Length: 297
Image (cartoon, rainbow, N blue to C red):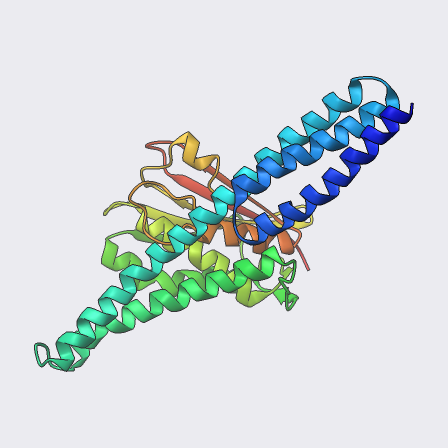
C-alpha cells in the first residue's frame, strides 16, 4: 500500500509539472508538443486512478480521454494554421493591386484619373469587407455577437437585396428574380435588419458569382407557422458533396471560388444568434439553394 501510495504521489507531482509545460507549449503555438505532453499528463492521471482502484479500467478510460483530447488539439492547431494562411492570401492580392497601381500613378506611368484609381478603390473595398468579416468572426467566437432587434419587414429585405445586386447580375448576364408564396406583406421577423441584410446580400452575391451567363438567381419567401423561410436559389454548377457537407465551416470554399470562404460561416453565426436555422442543398449540375428560417416578430 505504501509503495502504491508513493507511486501515486510521484505521478501526481509529475502531472502537475507536465501541466505547466502544456500551458507554456500551447502559449507559444507548439501544438504537437503540447499534445505529447497532454498524452503523458493523462497517462499519469490514469496511473494514479489505476493505483487507487487496483484495476486497469481507469487507465483505459484516461487513455481514451487522452486520444480524444489530442485529436481536438491537432484539429484546432490545423484550423489556426489554415486561418493564418488564408488570411495572408486574402490580403496579399488587394494589397498588391493597391501598391502596383499607386506606384504606376506616382511614377507617371498612369494618370491619376478615375479610371486608374478604380482598381485601388475596389481593392480597398475588398479589404474593408474582409476586416468586417473578421470582426464578426471574432465577436462570434467570443460569444459577443450582439443584435439590435426590431420587427423587420421581409418584403423590404428582399427588395433591398435584389436592388443592391441588380447591376451585378445584369453585368454577369444573370436574371435576378423574386417570388412570394402569397401577396405582400409577409409577416415581419424579429431580428437585426443590418445583419440580416448582410446575410442575404452575401447569399445573393455568392449565387450570382456561381451562376453562368443566361442562368437565374431566385429569391423566395414564405410563412411557415411561427417562422418565415427565405431562400436564395441559383442555376449554377452546384457543389460536390464533400464541399456542401462542410459549407458552413470557416474558409471552406469550392475550387476556383472567389472570396475568403467566411461568408457562409458568418451567415450561420448570425442566423443562429437570431434563433433561426440555415440549410444548404446542392448537388453537381443542379444548382444550390440556401434556406433561412427565422422567427416572426
